[in-house]
Length: 192
Image (cartoon, rainbow, N blue to C red; front, side, top):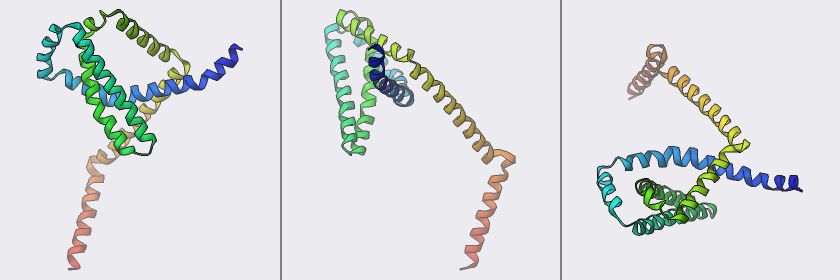
């Protein structure tokens, strides 16, 4: 019976891991994290940090939860729009939610001690971290990440090879393109 449940849950596990990798690799590393770093380094937010630290923890919790829920609802709405065939509005909504999510991460980083002072919030946060760690222990996650790293390394070496082809040989390729352009241009001027 235990084997049956494992086989039944295996597709769900694959789906969870693939969604996690998709968001970790594409959304977080490529979009949200650089934006989060940019937001964190803004002078305005550095000044705001002191204000946030002086605010009552209940007010911070209320503001954080409101931001978090709005970001999650925007993500769900974007997904629904994409599934219903409205890809451009869905992608646009998702793109618009990323700066708000980055600000929410900043707010959490600044006010973490106050937010974690709520027992239920700390419990939820710890369970979320444990769940993310559980995903990272799955064989499918480790194997997919290994393959992804191989693909990235292959893409990097292909990019370097292409870059070398176009810039290598003391600009020979570039000179050939320039000569071809000049011949075409001269031929066009002769026909006039």
